Image (cartoon, rainbow, N blue to C red; front, top):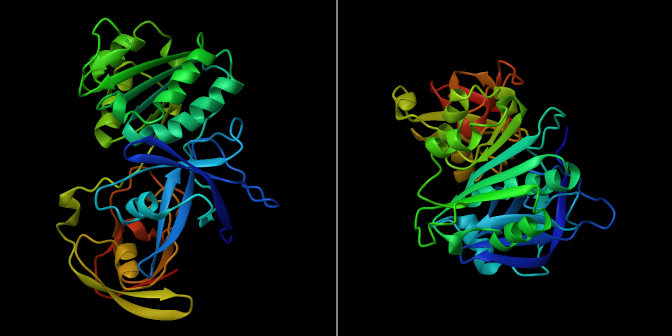
Length: 345
């Protein structure tokens, strides 16, 4: 099925912190974009004559917000994020793909407490889901545990404080700061990083089978939380996490060599050199072949190709992809094992 594309107008740009902004897009007049809280929107821009594509999670919720909002943190040396921060203005038109992603609120009538665990810009999809839960599930206790350097670097701090007032009896928020300068008597502000000791203490008196957990942040955060939840015997079916990166082990590349790959795209065959450590998708884009792609973490199927000849391997996937056939490969994490690889997109 062909991917739907839209061109959206930026109605507002909201500054969240010194290095983070939220782009607020106006919904199309006729073809409204439908999405679920927690999904992401893929933006495409021409930068220095080359097309770049990047996915950004919705910070808006369709039940709460009229605009489509995505929040973007400036990444040092990040071509796309720096271009957005430095050049994009209100009124600009931006090409986007249809919303994607499976990090969404899963309704479960047995759940009476939901915990959102995030660090830094990982708050983006969490806020989207959190707002939806608050407005649609008034009997569910909502808890946000959020790590940052300090309050100055805390994305959505004003929004979170407003939600605390609006949903005083339903929402609780704990802040973890690595640069701690606050009153130690405030037990909702902690020094350091989110740790297993805190998690076990926070959950010691709850019925763990009636809790759900949404995690978004670095690999270390996910591992810490999942290990603590395993100690408490929390059902895996109620633990959800969003992946922003591939997890690459250097040992996985020991038998990978620089190879040439035949890319068959739109009826044309192009021989592309794939350097050791680079994916087939990266190499094709560097060669000027505008293959379709979005998440770059192996979570979506946008860059899926079919292996016609040779052998290759997918490296770094954090989730099992049972939906892929034997000949299907996600090119964002695919690496050739032989010099006769032909892949068709």
